[in-house]
Image (cartoon, rainbow, N blue to C red):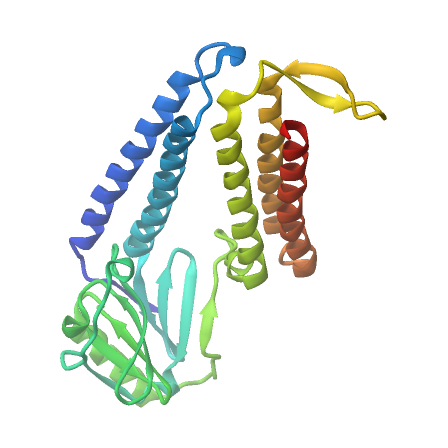
Length: 303
């Protein structure tokens, strides 16, 4: 197989700069939160303002991770050709396009394509519809007008191989020779990032719900924490009377335990998904239910 790297692009370095900025911002907020919690746990000044700073740190950390993924994808983007197919590689993934299905190779200079920031970070990716009705998929480091387009009967691929002329000549030569094995069109996902798990709609919805409930519970508790008495009843007897009074900071262990359960179930789901997708889905749905149960427990205590 012969491979071509994608054309170099300044977008990668712009993405790197953005990644550094968001990482620094996340670190700034986390340091502020850490400084506020350096005192003994009984003296923690938990309030909504501290929680919002923590939430800002989490949001920026997520953005940093997403940008880092795009940078890594851009740096590993490459294209390949062999006797039977055309391939696009990125981060351990491989898109396979049977050589016999490629009908034309042409410039995409005339293609009208509007790309938002979310689909041009690091490199151009995502899909859009051509006037012919075909779905064009971007895997390029340059704007569409500066790329080339491979077309099949139903799809198109916008690409920017380094040394485009050599790539086109090689592709045309291999098409003339003919294929010796029929390939299946599709994406072969790498296992490192567990794409199958994250691409499952039930898993994603359950995780988003569980994560949202966890953040809402923690935020609500942070908002009411200053009004809680120094000692609260975490347990009651059969008559409903307080049987054990505990320092109020112990109520914080409930949402933290719920969040820890979410992380553990997500980790187990990633491990189990390829063997039992249903079991992995059930774990994530259980995570959402656990957030609700812990929320009810907190409401019961502070009512």
